[in-house]
Length: 188
Image 1 (cartoon, rainbow, N blue to C red):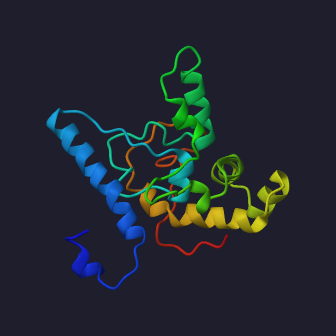
Image 2 (cartoon, rainbow, N blue to C red):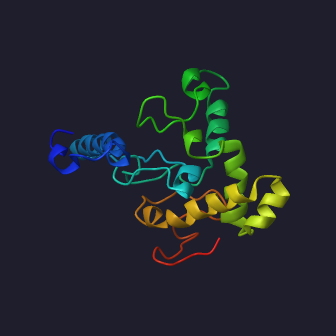
């Protein structure tokens, strides 16, 4: 923050400062991986990658996106499955509200719908190419929210095109499974 102070003087604290933490952590992980001839696995899931709720050169850093094609609700289900015989993932991790943890008391729901609402909308749009009105009607959710989610997906394509390769597990994974131009006006 001291190094950036001359550039940021007179501006309010915001996303640029919040993303520093993630980017520094990504650089440290890459340094360790380089030192020991290892690969960093990215932590972003399909819900986060779809909506752009991920930081370029931060939590997106790495060589392989193992859960990049797994929606957030399914990540939690997989974690519960992994814990079925013995605790591998701390219960506190599974019980706390999802958060990017870039600022105090931040929750993903501050800027995204709850994942149990978001994931079915994403699946309908990404994998079935359903229009917003159809998604809203079929799922019984607010049409404006669906349109906002679709807009987030389209605006985040530039991030996905820079992402690590994704292990494909659904019908339409990001990457070679679903690519869109990054500089096009999309009507949603």
